[in-house]
Image (cartoon, rainbow, N blue to C red; front, side, top):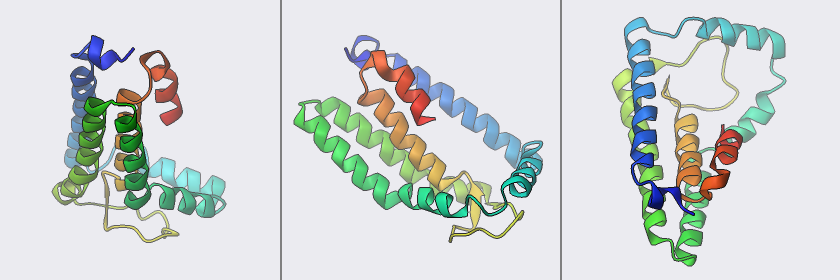
Length: 162
C-alpha cells in the first residue's frame, strides 16, 4: 500500500521537517561560519585515516555525480511508468529535479569555501556548502524512499539510504 495515497499529508510534513532542519543548519553556518567541531572532526579523521580512503571516496564521488544519478533516476521513472505509477513518477521526478537544481543556487547564496584541512584528491567546485554530491544523492534516495519503496519497507530503506 502506498502511504502517499492513504496519508497524503505525510509527504509534505516530512518535506517541511527536512526543510526546517536544513534552514536551521544553513542559518547557523551563515551566522557562525561553521558548526562547532566540524574542523576538529575533519582534522581528526585525516590524522586517523590519512589518504587511505581517497581512492574509495573518489569512486563514491564519481558514482554520486549528477550524470550517474540522472541516468539512475530515468531508469526509476521508466520503471514507475511501466508499473502504471504515473503520479509517483511525476513526484519522483519533481523531487529529484528540485534537489539537483536548487543546490547550485544555494552554493551561490552561502559561498562557504571548502575546508582547507588538506588538498582534495578530486576536482570539486569552489564552494563546499551545501554539498552537491550529498544533496543530489539525498534527493534521489529520499525520492526512492517516498515514492518507490512500499510503505512497510520505508524505515529499512531510509536507514540503508542514510
